[in-house]
Amino acid sequence: FRSTALITRIFLSDRTGNSILVSREGGNDWKVNDSIKAKSETIRQLLDVIYRVEVRNRVPKSRYNTIIKELAARGIKCEIYLEKEEKPFKTYYVGGQTEDALGTYMMLENSTVPFVTEIPGFNGYLTPWYPTKLGDWKDRIFFSYSPEEISSIKVEYPAFPQHSFT
Image (tube, rainbow, N blue to C red; front, top):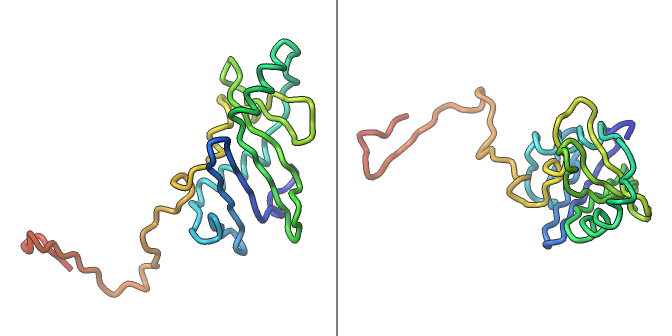
């Protein structure tokens, strides 16, 4: 993928019914399922994987049937949408790790050939960077103010007022 700057939406779904839609809300702000602020680290990592992933090799014929079954049973579907496009630019399926845990099985939609993919220089597999559970995407910031916007903070412990402070 040459540039992730044009990506405006990414849809991820798994075979257990989990699905996530992350959408760019201008600049670098992303929303999950059109309502929740996305955790910036999760979107940054996914965009980085999309940008850097490369094909290492084709799946060997001896493993072909096994990998196709695995992708069908447990694969994560990833749809990438570009600016002003209603149809996905690219759709592919992310499977599990290779035997050496240094590659990830992936397959483009409408292809008959699965591949082993990797990020050169990264030792591991890529499946965890395609999370489909909402909890992995929700920004954990409780409130967001710059220091200049805060005039005071008060913490009250009703059961232990002696520990309360401003």
